[in-house]
Length: 428
Image 1 (cartoon, helix red, strand yellow):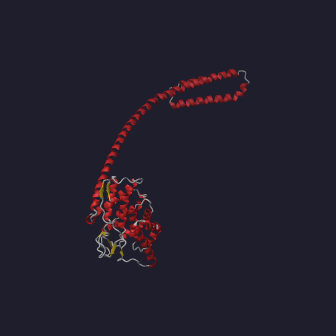
Image 2 (cartoon, one colour):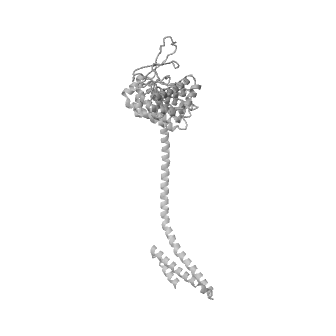
Image 3 (cartoon, helix red, strand yellow):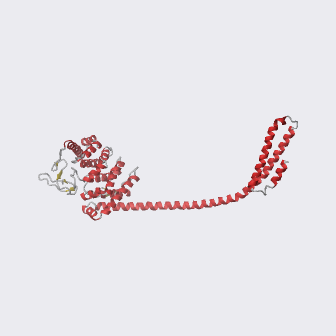
């Protein structure tokens, strides 16, 4: 009877809504569950019933009927749902496939455009670098004349400020790009940066240029970055020599200005120079340049703070070794640095000035003459007429620079520089 009722209910399944059908199916399954529970409870009694076998057979038949019925009810429902959703899914799939094809095509076009733009940017970059290298070297040649630099600083100060900002940014970008290895000297980017630093060197070779460089924020930033990034050039390979040379020359020229001297101490130049002198790969020329800067910043030094900074930053033992084992000129400058440090220490302790501005340093062939404070052109070349001395060679005369006494320096690296062309590129 229950089965007949179940069959009647199932006959109307097509007219029922989906929710009603599911509720009906749930009720039927619940009824079957109750019957099975009753059967399990009555199983012990049935075990002793002689009609047990026939009863089990009936249950088996009824189970098969239920299974067949469920399959006949559920499977058509699933098939109908499948028939409904499959076209929709197929449509969505085709849409997504079409979108994927469109996006793939657009991506391929974008990649081609990117590659084309990369080539254009590279060509433009090479052109700009080549143009910058050519114009930079031309301006470098022009800047060896003090009159040209004076014109720049008199009527084009805003442009010079912009130029110093460009130099600072280009220098940092060059160091960052070639951090693992400096390109060869004939590389256009190398020549571009070399030309920029050469111009700054020549600007700083006159008092007005030094003053402008160190009092302008862009110029101060450049000097600070030169000191900051100089350790990136260690060890000093042959390709780094020209750049290092110009960087040291700029620092030397700046050291002749009182404000510049303070900036060098503020930027911890002594530590960098000491590290530089400890490099085994340092050439004789660069070693001499480092010592020249130390010679300049230690000359007549009386500020206790700066004296303390030097004595804690510089390896005196290393400088003494150079004084003993170095070549003639290098050894002489190293001895002078040690002497001036000792005199500064004595001056610090006793308040005594051990320097005489009229003193003749015969070992250097240098005469220091007194000039009014704020007058003079830094380092200049002029004929020295020594009377009875042989006049076979000119002497370097060092006037007292703008607002600070100039140290006993040979000016081969501080005079206005001009590059000369070689087959491998432009070098000093």
